[in-house]
Length: 247
Ligand code: OAD
Image (tube, rainbow, N blue to C red; front, side, top):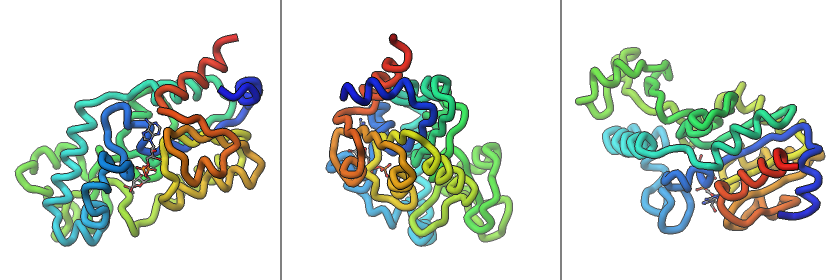
């Protein structure tokens, strides 16, 4: 690790982290844009992750999300998630912002997670966006997707943000504030291509934060970053924790 970073890290009092799909890659969850293995290398994002795609073919969309839910249920958080849960207790001001919908950060022990793109485990009504209880879903599991209890034309859909949909304003505002006020922003496992999440690192840098990018590839975030740690998040994030815990 860069000696300057190693020396500075223990003095940092305020860290904001932005994670993306790469952080869950070593848990066996595919990313979106990795060549060959990414979801979007195999599927049209607009068909599976947009309100129009759902309207056109709700069954295919529901089945794809059910498949992803089952994949998540069969897998576990990895050392990257665990390291971030530890970091929360080691830094005075710590905010974890994620684009991931798998819930692995919480499973690993992170207490406060800003989920920019929602959570795949929850369901909402396609018409009213009201939450649908898990019990209702399992009672109507023969329907793909189950009907909504809230609206006669509504269907159950995952509580995730699709292309063309707005993010939760309060969550986004808190994420922007955390980016604008931190000393260090760690960006791990994201291609930095989806807005508005992708603008958080630039906002942090404009407000004087230093940027650390963790990714086996280079991209727009590494170009902006003070440091790029080349490799998997599950290798580098535990090493950062070691810097703070090992004298
Ligand atoms: P992407 O698939 O766009 O990017 C994943 C990034 O993780 C790439 O830059 C990879 O190089 C990197 N990566 C792969 N393996 C890694 C590892 N082991 N450790 C660290 N990095 C690794 O995923 P996101 O940037 O999260 O949105 O995508 C952003 C949004 O686009 C997602 O939240 C999703 C998608 O469409 C919605 O579904 C709304």
